[in-house]
Image 1: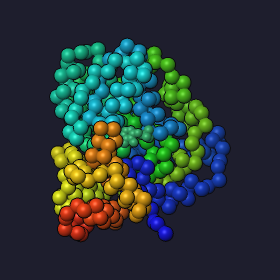
Image 2: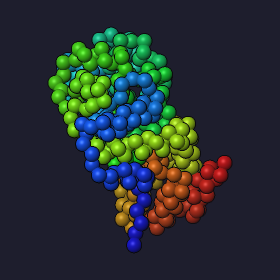
Image 3: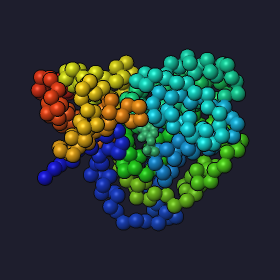
Image 4: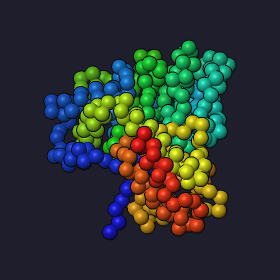
Length: 378
Ligand SMILES: *Cc1c(COP(=O)(O)O)cnc(C)c1O
């Protein structure tokens, strides 16, 4: 028998309450019964987004919400700043190109956070820039960007700030309104403890002005249609009924804990993971801007990083993530988000130690687990 543990930065494990909700009989969506579910979900999302802005639930993965942001805000020929410091920042650039939007790319070294002054320089140099696309947690490198500081810069311009918070929402702080994040997108399978399949997007008054004038083609993701519908507690198309029903369960859990405690739990798990890696003599990929969502760790020289991840998964049932794109084989990533808790982290570290030991890496067996436990005991 092999027991499976999921420690990846999406999808994350699911709480029993969520699984139960997913198993309920389907109801029809044009009914007062579903309207109550949708209303509760939309309001619960506003709590997690920390916003009074409109929030929409889309039937798509997180990238669908990213596409909705680009397609609704901009017109072909518009200029937008994209911040690239990993695979997901690059996705903003790719989406802009797909819609004929001209990206003004800020290339950040992978493993580092963007300097908000770089954004200020771009916006100052070109007043035609209509939007800035950035990432809260760059999941491919484990870096958190300072959205509060970026918001302080962007709010002085006509450009809107759009934030990919797909892996950060419900795990680390993002004060949508206080930090002037005009558009925030997220997805269901990360901090929100749900299966993949829902995209979320919030829209500020400043962003609505752009949306009303934008000329990019859009149909399924037309947020004007979504707005008309939600004002009547409805959706333009068949919503993902079961997922939204389950969303209310995960939102309930987040509310019961309180966001501050949720963030604290993530912070502690991240600290434990980082201390464990140091104790094992491993180097963090993003030592300065490491996120509380996922920890990226450099694979030691002479070790096969892909084999390490594969052995943990196939031999012992512990799934962590490898590196993506240019980091393939060079890093591994341990997630500490969503329905992952203290002892899941201990299991992950313990399995990592076992495989490192088997691969001939020299370290003091148990040192990682001990370092993590010491953090949790504090
Ligand atoms: C997971 C992730 C995505 C992609 O989301 P999908 O749900 O796979 O479309 C985008 N951005 C970030 C930061 C992510 O963590």
